[in-house]
Image 1: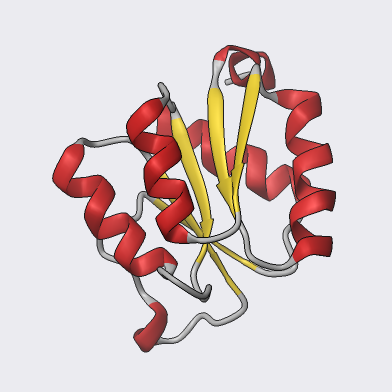
Image 2 (image 1 turned 120 degrees about the vertical axis):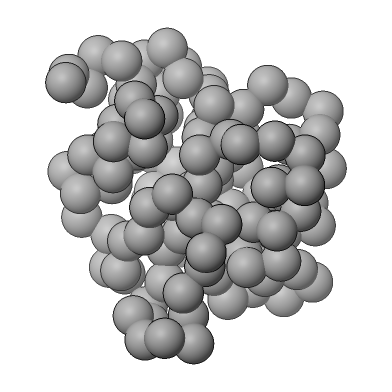
Length: 121
């Protein structure tokens, strides 16, 4: 599978930490057709409800609404692929609704590979 497929997709990236969000958004904008950005799960849910989103990449621990709660709300609406990003990799940080998982710090090829894997299922 080729990264060219990513150029056809709209991604929603959810991250509360400013520096991390800015650096990953720059990376995503080079590969994806559209990049929508939210600072927490509640903001992301609003964006999701009002836009066509092909894949969601979300941090797990955020204020207002965390990634776990966001994933549950998304699943009540539809089956859009969700990739969870977390600094933690233990049992307490597993998200059954997620299609993929990445551990911080994010490596760009791992990110693109997991998104491709999720959208091609």
